[in-house]
Length: 290
Image (cartoon, rainbow, N blue to C red; front, side, top):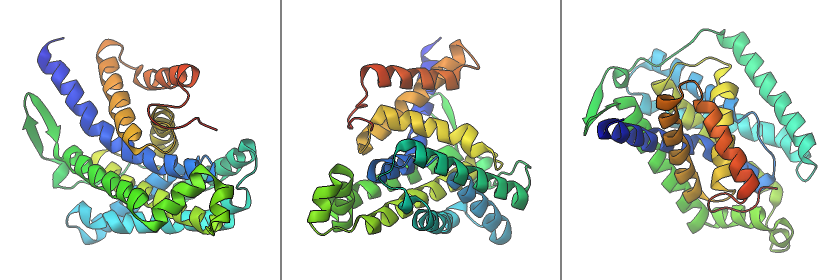
């Protein structure tokens, strides 16, 4: 393996890894705040991709115009699910929340098959046809688009959590719910806000996915839920810095695996996750998974 190939694999690991950090952020946020593992997170992403797809094919223009609409539609769906279902099981055992979340995932996936069929879709914008040369690496414009959108949103979420009253309330509930209640924070309200942010990020991630890859109703669980779990475990709950580093690390490791052991890229990600669970369950910078 020469230096050009190594450079290409690392560069793509940084670019795509940052995008996957954004994909995982929504799952990490709601898991950390309400302790509910939202297995429907992959379907949220796919719904965002379909919103972008249909808006793009109806109105055309730049796919970035549909970032916010995609996020808002999925955010609203997330709030409805949180209000009607997830709020009823907060604080109960993980098995109960997993079973309910799996049910939500299956209902959403099945509904998308009925509404949109199982045909593969992709947003054929000018991003799909152009690429840029960075050193010796050729990178698609769609990947550059997703990378900068992901960086901006990750920074905005960091500032929201660190610098605003809402963000401090979210962190308070995540750290010590009972103490937060004594300070006058309404946990049900915070769960709704956290779910909206989580689902909004998933919807925006769906916009990026629609630009970069083809998708169908089943791709959320098969392609995006698993990697979100892996990145969240490696990062540790509550660590945005950990999410970025974990995303880059996992995607770079998978890129190198594709060279030396093609077909085992996904297995490599889960192998790394297993090792972290066994030897460093707090993740890179977060706290113990509960």
